[in-house]
View 1 (tube, rainbow, N blue to C red):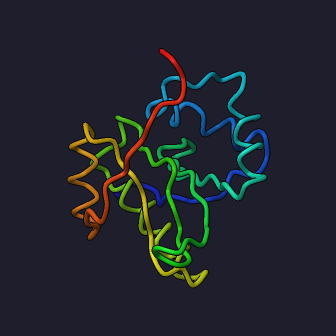
View 2: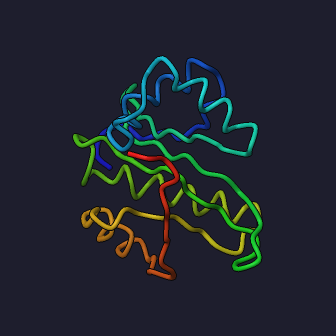
Length: 147
């Protein structure tokens, strides 16, 4: 990453969470700014953490994640959301944040690091492969809401 070094921090205050919204919106365009902090606070009660990568005073990448234990893989760090701003892609922001997440998982004795990625996100898939990840399972879903 060129220029000043990036800082990664956990968004814990309402102000910090709100600073992550514009970046998260690029991945989750259905979200509303008015409810974002409230939703993150609700998810935090279930173990959700929100990490932000900041460079030159601007949040450039965010990751929402949680640590849990499941029978299939033991203790794992599961990434719910991972996004880098369009302008910051190919500038090592995503790689820096994912390596931070992997180290966070190792420091907490996790057995695996997992995430799901939409089948249409080919650019993201190439990035995950470059970061040493592989496809381990299919994720099936059934919408329970009538459209």
